[in-house]
View 1 (cartoon, one colour):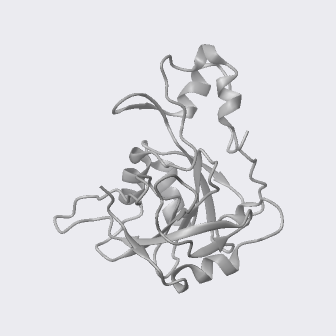
View 2: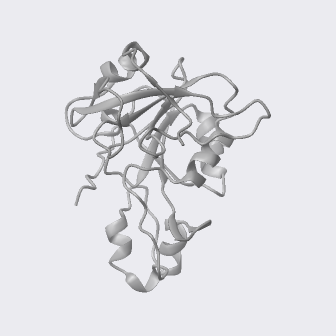
Length: 219
């Protein structure tokens, strides 16, 4: 059962679509430019239902150092440090624990928020509403609340059963996005919000720059 409603009004995402850099594969190709800080948040490794391990823990257990743009294939190449029976971090589907933590640190309220998900995902039955950079992805638009009447977090879920990669409030105070093959999220935000994200123990997060190149993950 999905928690979001389809939106047909392209204007909800027109500001984002127009601002994205269409040349190259920079952070500003995936989330709008101009934020004070940019943070990359990694999907955890699920070792069993309800139990996850952060990439940083795997790297440190293997005696190596973390880096802001580390990739899953780099970790998987050192199989001795990767937990057995793990489920690889999904591409284009933020983990529910990441979504819950983001709802908490972003201090969302009961207003309606905006979301976008690639129209090519299986089960995505909304009309292609607007094209996002850098690969011309046709994105289906959604809206919904992330806190219910009792103040309980509601994980955003699309018609395809996925957590969307794009989230933003109407005022674009922050914006979350990534490409469809990514095992991580990128958020543009202010200094205070970035500090809360980096300090949250449930988020495996790293400061990045607006001008950083984003490695392709569609191996």
